[in-house]
Image (cartoon, rainbow, N blue to C red; front, side, top):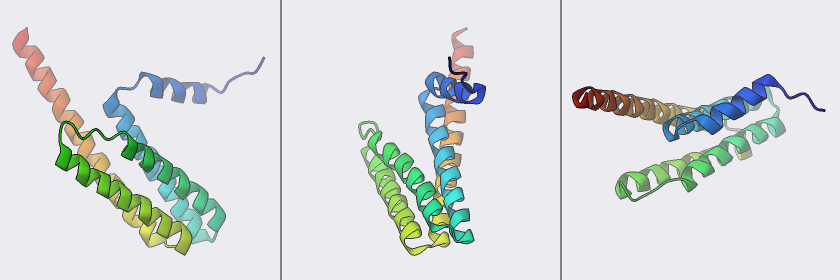
Length: 136
């Protein structure tokens, strides 16, 4: 009988029990982590490892692109899709051209998006809490 790693179990439970806003933030955090790893590998001359990490970030960004729903705000979603595509392409540039600056640019964009979504989620929670108090 295989003994499972408690940390891996915790991570799996975190993902399966998280709401959509938390999953989105987790995706941004994962992408940022992989881009940073890729950037570090580029700077240390480990090109193969850099491409592996950057590729993982690209997969996360591709998943974010696939989950976009244009119904509520078509223009916003179109702009976000273009931004995701831009980041995906910059990560390709980073891996192919050993360009740590391209990776740094993507980290900045992902961090800004993560911060914006964090603020939006907080505002939604505060608004929901305020509406709950009015109903009581």
